[in-house]
Length: 69
Image (tube, rainbow, N blue to C red; front, side, top):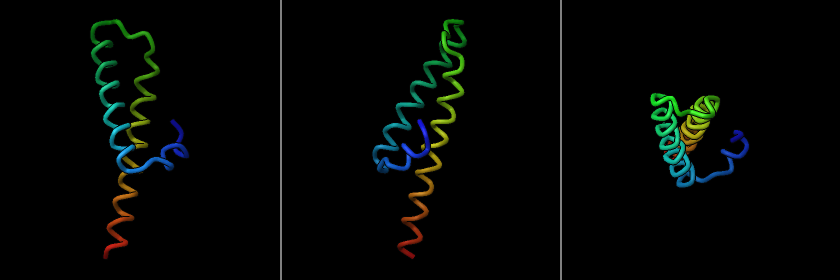
């Protein structure tokens, strides 16, 4: 997922998508330990996607706090 796509999501969508990505990442880690992982590059992609979600959530929260104070 590109950052431009992430920027268009709302806070609720970001939280939901982040949770889904973490679950998928967990499942891939389990597959990796049991030597059943078919797409090892997907782990790296998911880690980066989770980081993008968290970065955007942090930006939105800081923006919201600065607007208040």
